[in-house]
Length: 202
Image 1 (cartoon, rainbow, N blue to C red):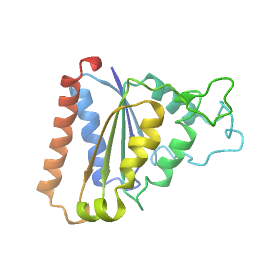
Image 2 (cartoon, helix red, strand yellow):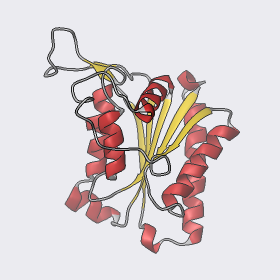
Image 3 (cartoon, rainbow, N blue to C red):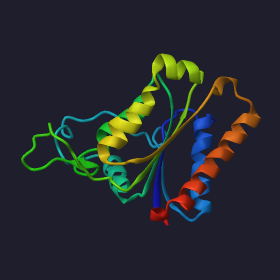
Image 4 (tube, rainbow, N blue to C red):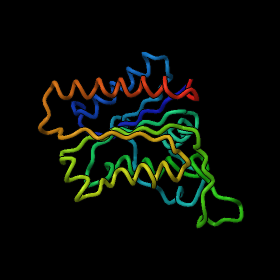
């Protein structure tokens, strides 16, 4: 079993980094092989190039590495803050450049790209951990939680990933150390339970 864990947060002391470390440690503790990437630390370039647009090829080593690991992994974990109801730009660029044809999806030969995709990531498990400074009631009632639609339908749903789990931690700015420690324990428990409860991952 292999997991890919992708972090998108520029501040090394952020709670997102604490989540990243906890997820990696938990997978290591239960003997799951892990690909780990801090997009900011690795200086990933999020800008889709002209050469990549409409092409199956990229000259960027990181793009090709991430795409190959995407295919090899059974579990895909994305960790990022909620910025304006969206992932940070560096992760949006990862989505544009890495989660692409022919790795994550494709189209039939007679389809120019306007039809339904061939879902090439079926059977994988998607996990997203988010942080926010918006209270849950306002997030759900006013903003309608756009990140849930982005990940659940626009990305994972498009790729055929129907085993999808997402958790938002809030309000980070007002959280105590005890609350953050409790959340990290929840993450560890979540991952262990997921592995135990899904026989197709063992």
